[in-house]
Image (cartoon, rainbow, N blue to C red):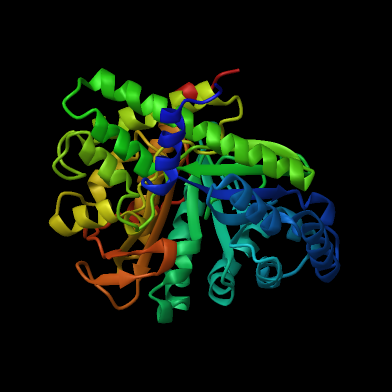
Length: 453
């Protein structure tokens, strides 16, 4: 017998009771051959190429859902950073590029399209600057386009000019979408050590080192891991760790099966499998609940960082046992507004911004979907980014900041974004200024351990 009745029942429970799903199948497409001196012609080439590769992505995703019984929550596209493609056009705004991407996403019923991006870890080209200037309006006039800016790497250090500017961009984006509580910022992320093959938004883009087109998959199962932790109640920590690792192995195998089948049907290469635990606002689909099932009274209390470190490591170990294609971010996301457990932790006071920052030292990917007061200074937002990027740079890991300064609202107020983005209380930001430091500009040099050749 290939599978025992117990194994079959266990798999059924993963989907039916514990909310296991494939969070996203993401088609990555190179637009390097679309660049030319005419912005209009370049956008037409971009439109034609994406349509050619992606026309069957949603239908194939739906077929696999039906045939395999595996929910695929999002069908997405990631493209070459637009600053690299649009720079040759000589245009002074890239908003039309975002509008074209949004049009493609809507015509093809794609949930999100990432790549309105620039890589500025060491310097800012004229095209990078134009793209960054275009972000506030682009996020306001589009619905499905995501923007990302990589501001640092372990190898290059942190571009503090870019960090300073991104604080201002975040503020402008929030103000430009004030009628939606700053929702544009939910589609904007700044990163350090951004991976070129990440299938998760808002940081997804198709890196210049990738092929012409690949299909990557992001699989998520916080509910399954939480249930596994519940089964090991009262057992030793090493037994619990082994249980998490075995569960991650099973989740990864499901994701790879779906990803490879989708790539085959779409006629492109399979890229990577990102096995990050990505929560949703639904009860029972929470990373915070996993931590509490490991023995914490509330996420954010003493022991949280240790629990999260073990969880992230065991998920990675289970994943690499199951697949040779693990990539992207692969860890545990802690987006406050998207996780019912973290929302409750904020409400009861067991977690704050500083504790979340400490937790990002050991997990993917950073400070995510955090609502902050609308009057937070741009320099303070830049300071939050600088702290987070320093963690990523020194520890040679991806870190990111996706914060939403909600216009007209203060700490303790509630903000609702809807759908998978959820809602949350607005968190307090340290009131002491870092403006003098941020306004210095320049670059934080790479750490000594980056010099390895």
